[in-house]
Length: 171
Image 1 (cartoon, rainbow, N blue to C red):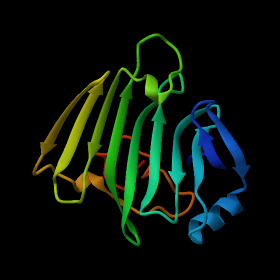
Image 2: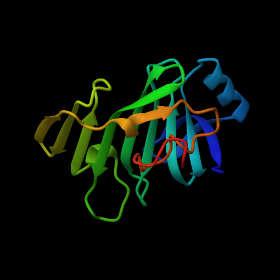
Image 3: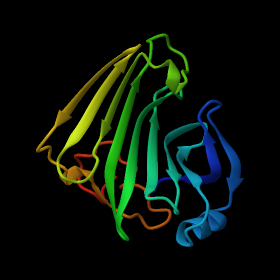
Image 4: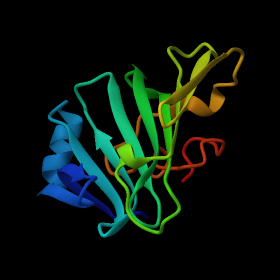
């Protein structure tokens, strides 16, 4: 089972928890449609991933993964579709210069941005490198892997899986 730490927010710039929350406070926010908070999975100094949870928004949960230097390298944005179902609507992947150090997201040498407007198999993919943006639209893209059951509080293994081809409910 994953170790989960809760806080008001994860500070990406300094790679630290801002305003730690007790599990009970985070659970109240989660279950009572309260304020936004973050769940840090794994070791706080080198998390497996961070979930940004906003119980009041349609864009309910964002999952961020990091490289060995703490730079954000991948983000999944899940949209609430039904009370118990989320849809992976937005994915961003960042690549950084290979210089062996931490980078802010705006220092990425390449950004891949994928967005599903709705669950109809149509997606838009943008690649940004410097000032150059290349965009393409795709149709008939399989979306089975985009569906995710709404997690029970504290049981975040499924939504926190990086390999989205793995079936839901498995971490």
